[in-house]
Length: 114
Ligand code: AMP
Ligand code: ZN
Image (cartoon, rainbow, N blue to C red; front, side):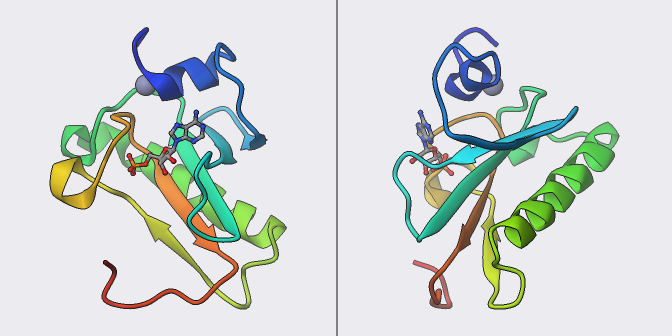
């Protein structure tokens, strides 16, 4: 997807502070962090929103969450806790239309979320 910001980060065309990558996923620090640790984990595959997921993406999405768990551990968040967030479409505030999970940690989060 030539017009996608996150595909350009994967391709190295736009710089990012990459903290982890594997065959399926790339993870980098959010440019506008909402917590002391705020990392985005994205699949290398361009999927615009959660609505576009197919059953064949189940393994990929599972590996995305496992990558988030691994990164949370590396960031020393496992014991205190952290939050994973997927935003889908306008009401949730999705602004980049390439599926991503936010890994947020380093502070206490409220519930319900805003
Ligand atoms: P969402 O609102 O769930 O679509 O999240 C998109 C996230 O991407 C926001 O938290 C932005 O701050 C973040 N973001 C946008 N552009 C960049 C960039 N060039 N590098 C890192 N994060 C970005
Ligand atoms: Zn993309």
